[in-house]
Length: 250
Image 1 (spheres, one colour):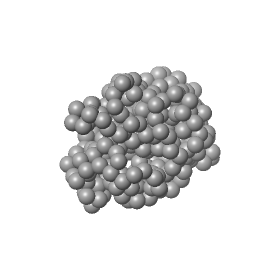
Image 2 (tube, helix red, strand yellow):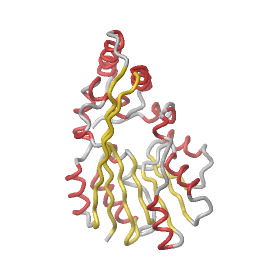
Image 3 (cartoon, one colour):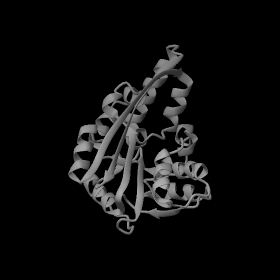
């Protein structure tokens, strides 16, 4: 499995505004209503955008915030945002938190990076309190074969076959790891956008797919993009399929 160099990606990561806007996480509010004080773990927190947005929504609430990420460069950016959070530089398979100490674990657009996914699920399960919630949110590659990244750099789609678990496999593994109340929600978006935006997105190379692929394949994709520009194309189709899976510790 190819790895993404987040030391490089961190330099441009927050320039993609789609990564900085998180809606209010109602799960946090529900848990606060039940318990009064909670611990929230953002696993693979990146530059801390989820934590930043939720702290604004839940300002003054009795919440312990924790962010874990394997990339020290991404964590350094998160720390620069003056968050009231504990940051831990660790993989998802080996982080060290007290067992049954966390009420909510969120993992946004990151599970495909985990080298030992089964081990990471074991670690998450041990860290969650009984009745605690685990929620994954990610793209669903098998439902977005026309995504511009796959269209112009098809080698990335082959790599994602290895990196991503399908919905059914994910739910099976969660059940095998004793999670209960497992549910899945899908969203699909398709929109025409200006071709100039496509060029900007491709050149920025901040998606993990483009960042991990070799320069030879990346440049071939760039030629395909510019060929459409030179042919007078003014728009491209952006396709995104999102999958959210929620479950609880028994």
